[in-house]
Length: 221
Image 1 (cartoon, rainbow, N blue to C red):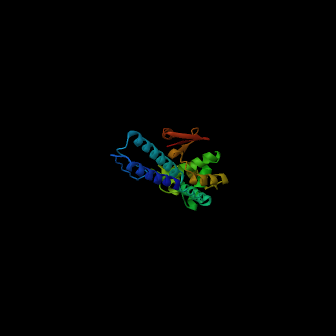
Image 2: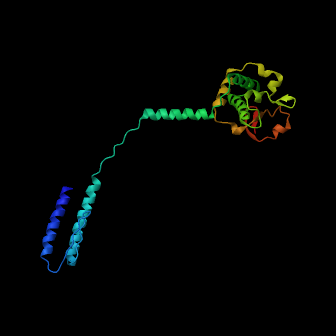
Image 3: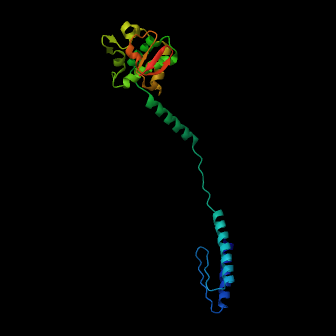
């Protein structure tokens, strides 16, 4: 940079000396952003000065662009980043998680055991999910006990309540299925019904929109 400024000083001195020796010619020099404006010189002289100062300006610009203050990049704290991701993951789980009392959980586990004891694990989770979906629906009672023990006319909504099968203890798979349903974000497209098409006699239930079939059960809404 010092060399550039020295060049400009020398050029200014030479220009001043040259202009004094030229009769009936005037020149104006401006040094702002390293530019000089020269008037009333011969065309050749004027052009030479413009080219010279343009070269200096370009050289100065290149050097200025090359001399910059490097940006210091701070490496991310991987520990904090991992902790943040874990926290967000737990938060999402809580958003989908449904909390019920221990007594209601036991009742739901026994219903799953009675309704889906011969079904695959996925089918057991689906049965529990239907009960939880009813819990959130305005068309059904607002408690697990209310949903499971709901009466439709003279009968209970779930046959195991009617025939007493719900009183039998739940298996480990049924308990795990309820736990999975409580934490899962898969709500089976809000299905609120399920039935076995091989033994179901109610024509109304068959008119519902089918969502999926798992094992021997059809799930609908």
